Length: 165
Image (cartoon, rainbow, N blue to C red; front, side, top):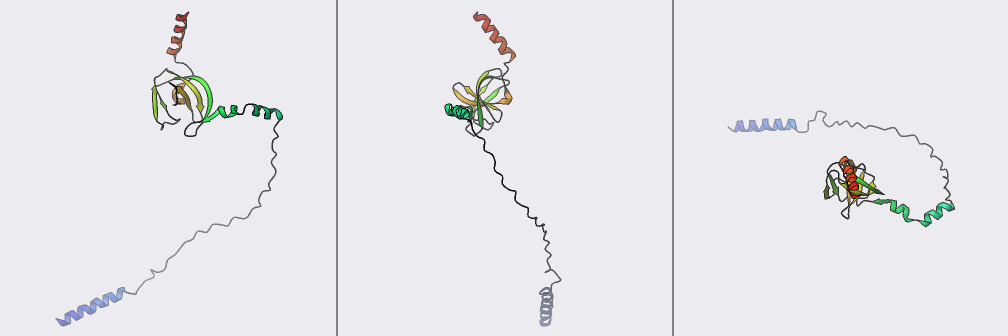
């Protein structure tokens, strides 16, 4: 029995000795490096003097006389979208949601039915219109409004004018 235990220990040690320290080329690692060509230096372009336009005295006097004319023409929505001031009447082509800003993600303020007129106070760069609705500044998508009155609204206006005479 003692011999069997010693034989088993020797065989186990022999198998363990085989696995330790014997490597068959696994330490060799190949690293591929892609090289990029070095760009050739180019000459920097020479700076040329740009002519500055000279303002005329007439243009200066016009700008000095009405400096708010340009500022009033372009305003911005709360989110920073430029608005060109314009007074016009638009009509809802479909049911329109009026929003607190010129975006479909803005807070809903009110709904307008098809054919209802809207007092436009400006056109936004993103296609929305700024309207004055019940004394509140709102925004409507330009996709759902038109400057052309609906057929029913034109007939109603003519009937009202005829009745007034």
